[in-house]
Image 1: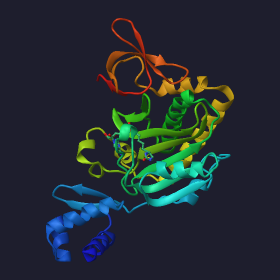
Image 2: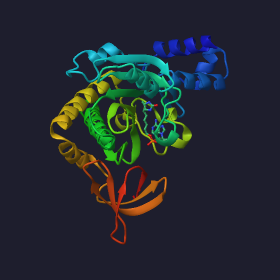
Image 3: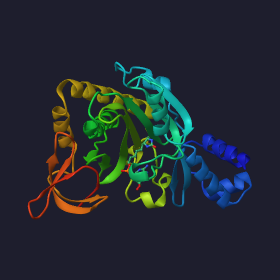
Image 4: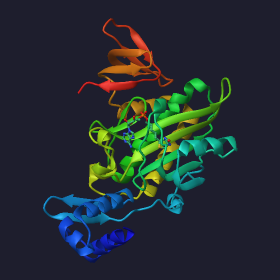
Length: 326
Ligand code: BTX
């Protein structure tokens, strides 16, 4: 069956820009159309971008583009952010590796980048789908000397940096949904997960996980995510060099982080608000203690969301999933 795969790649290579039908490929390689279809799906999983057009067939748009760590470094204009790179082909979660490195004393700005995560995670034990060669699955170690209660500020800061980095490199303009989602036309492009190592009151290390859907086609998302997720490829019909996007994000992140250390959260808050779509709207906040419907008035200087309910009572939301009315 690896012969069929090799045969497929060869057939596509020999006729670039032409659509090859399942039927003709099956005939050429002496197997069933179902086998062809299975192998096409396997090629997709390996990072090939294929186009399927009804009645015409398949065409390879691009072969797998892998992240080259040196490409992240080349031209990277930062003092420390993203300069120390741990790169792996396949991991359970980049968060686990970054957690370990932080305990071992990794320097601030260290990033862990993987081509694939088998156990990528979101908040509240949810899963984060991280298919091979398709996205940016990375964790960044920061060591700000701040009290624990200020850590949400760094999640918001990261969201701003990721919006700016993606916009600069690809032109895609994402919106931020409090606290940590980046959306394009209401579909999820990016998730950010902040974990920490701290003692009773001070932070030692923040482990900021960033997951960005870059080169996925619709079929690369599990069926249940297809209506709610998007990728930069889906928004631009172009496949992107993920190393360049990482580089753009690192540069924006360091700039904002240094600004934050010098001037505090206020300038970051202003930027965050300018990208936010949750503010000024009626939203439902689903918290672990129940749901609150209210008008999103703003965020506090600690990054807490303020909701005003129908009785005019203001609720401080520390952690929730936000549903917006469309
Ligand atoms: P979250 O809890 O806000 O979102 C998780 C939810 O998002 C899932 O329950 C699912 O519905 C949906 N989802 C899962 N995968 C995807 C995807 N690829 N695209 C769009 N929607 C999806 C968000 O958590 C925080 C995610 C952080 C991921 C990074 S990747 C690098 C680092 N390592 C790691 O294990 N996690 C972080």
